[in-house]
Image (cartoon, rainbow, N blue to C red; front, side, top):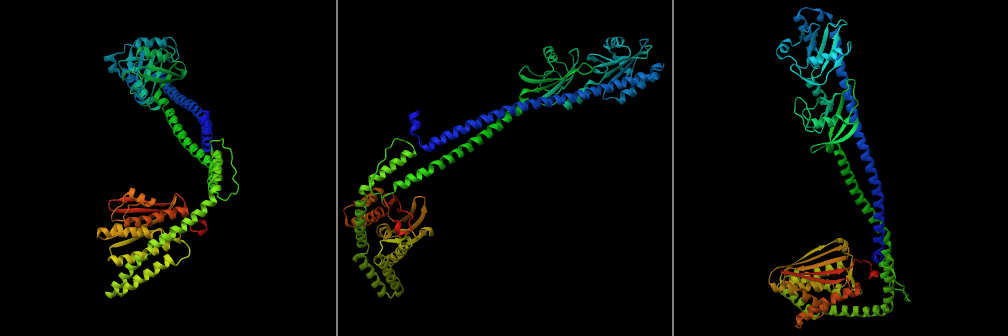
Length: 579
């Protein structure tokens, strides 16, 4: 592991240490923030639940106060209890029941002689109420006060709780009010109910007073709300505050309030999955934030590492190109990173110095020799004879315009190839010579081909050896298009990319194989005279490009079914001092 680290690039080491260190720091901070956020969220959720419970308790107390207020009003109505007219008493009780129908289900008055009157006298006479004797006993134990029963089933009010109070000091009778628990439960459900939440009110004796009959969290029938004995006992024994519990496959959170004035407790129950559902969303949000943080940290570490190492790499590349040091001096190499690269590049540079001067002289001699051979090969008696014969034929046919244009092209071509002192020319001049050359050949062969130019203006001033493109175009005409006896197309496309300038010459005539073109580049074509001539032109062009610009540049060809594509690779150079 240590040896591998030792061999790593300096930029890689810097990137790894920076990224892992930053990721560790940000990871610790993010985890700490997530834990704190989770704790705060849980505390806030429980606090909100407790607030809802307190508000529900306030509503419950107000509800009970209304019941007590109705009882006190009834107790003060001596005319009702002193009347000997049952119809009058029933009518008065019915008025109170109708006025408070959202609270009261049934009102009963038990006289001291045992007579029972009700606001629904007919129903009572028919159905009766088996729980009333037990309810009457509550009033006997607390004269002058209001007492209440455990929840029970009444034939008149169904599932209910009774509030009782004696009437008058002489015990004229007892007032009994059975409350409407079904309406009471429906109203509480709007405050504490929901798909993932339910509630219940437990009496001091452990009986279920009210609950949300539509909830699926707890297993009890729609009406009356009655829980299984084990679950009822489990809820009754819950401590005040927040607790976790399980019922079958449900994992629940229960928040239990303190007892109110009646000794009742409100229990709010949540589905644990829903209770902590937003915590899961919190984790997902932190996960997305962490992923974004890692991406930003990765990009930042990479950018910093590249900023740190790029100057060293640039310096190493520049040292590779130094060629003017007089006395070689070598450095010891013991590192595997960019600093070691600098030392190796410097040593490589020094090893080339001793041969540099000799190579330059030899390359200059070869350059001049190949230029002379190229000129002799391209502008020879054969080309001049055929061109002059073509001009004579045009003159004989009285095609004076074409004669003038051909002579103009020939003079211009000779001026470009023979009249310049420098062996370098611009791409613009080279293209101009190609246009003149192809005009002469089109006149000679009767417009057998079309020249199509696609030249990026940005590369028109780039420098190249003179007569680089003309031999390639000549090969395309003579050995690509003319043998097909059909109209051909020669396309020249030039543009700049990251590696320099690329010039593509394509014809749609006879194709050429890669192995044969490779032999042309090496100067070893087949033995027939035509191929030796073609091979000399291709070889001279490729070798001159190498002599001027170095190994990465030169010719490359791709043979296709209907022609050949030759690529000329040169650097983007516009100053003669740079060549």
